[in-house]
Length: 322
Ligand SMILES: [Zn+2]
Image (cartoon, rainbow, N blue to C red; front, side):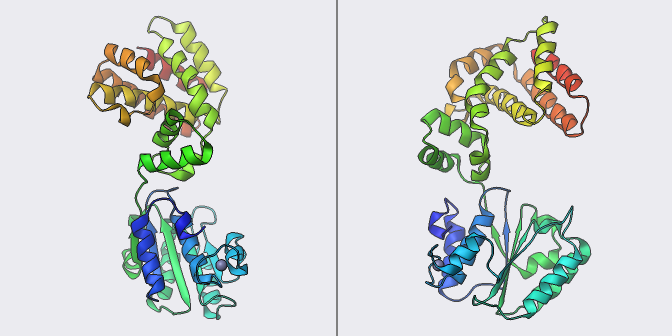
């Protein structure tokens, strides 16, 4: 991955490129922003540009290839073991950093999920940050910078990353996956600004089955308990996909709310179901839509706690049918 291959984040890219070209890289960076939007890719592009034998992040020299295959001796990665990054991991890192780099001009350490630094690990890392070496570069990545020690944050150059605009994700999805306009729009709208999410999506579920699921959902009526329970039973058998299915329901009710508040169709997720949306929006009121969205959020929380799935879905669908 080179800088040029990263979509979006032009501002961050330029800051890093300029620092690199002027030999003014900071000793430590804190890449902060939502998960899955490309912080790690940017960090790896930077590493490649620093390590590359051509000085470009060419992608074909031995250094670039080692970075891509994650076996460059001067690239160290730390991530949580279990729930946290342990002090032993930081101590091992400090030992490594005491040696000269083997092949690259400097050693680089990526600390992925830096918010998981425990208090003692964080304090140990602080020592390294307070005594910077020109032979080492630390890149901390986190979606939750507020969970880091203030002293760690202040010792790093902070680089905030924001979600990518939907139109940018849509453009790339359509290009790379040859999706049509509506498909690209739907996946991009459901990705919440993250390529990782958009590309990892179960396309059949989000593009094709979504319609059947919404058809079944809107066919339920308050008086028809049996079909409601049938649907609850069949959904309860899809344990793995259930969070995604509930997200599809959520996006549907959100679309209805947006329509009622006069938002443009560009804002909608289900643009291939405009007629259905208008029809359903006409017979719902905002208060009831908000109650349904609440019911969905409640059900997702319950399922995350491993409650009886079928029962939770029965209650949910009865609320959604009302
Ligand atoms: Zn190279």
